[in-house]
Length: 86
Image (cartoon, rainbow, N blue to C red; front, side, top):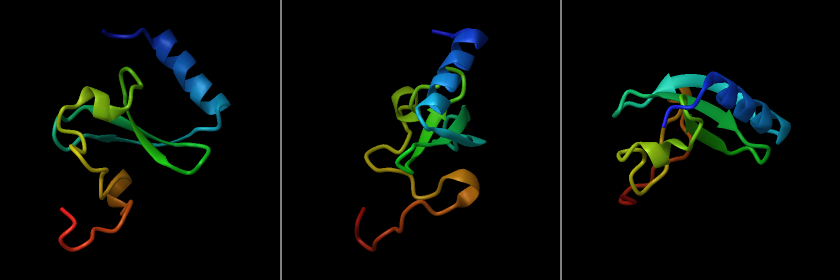
């Protein structure tokens, strides 16, 4: 279901009102959909699908599978990978 630009703009304003901060736009390495990276008021990075502003793991069946991403915006390391963890 495609959302209108006005609805997406209203969602963005609501995110900002709640303390979220827009960081960057990238593309999913698997499905090639535009992802907007937002930072929550608690400091957590959240990938949102650009067209609908839903969490990307809800719209991409390959997104992060059963684990969060190791690399996020422009290759910045989000968490350290442990040996034998996966």
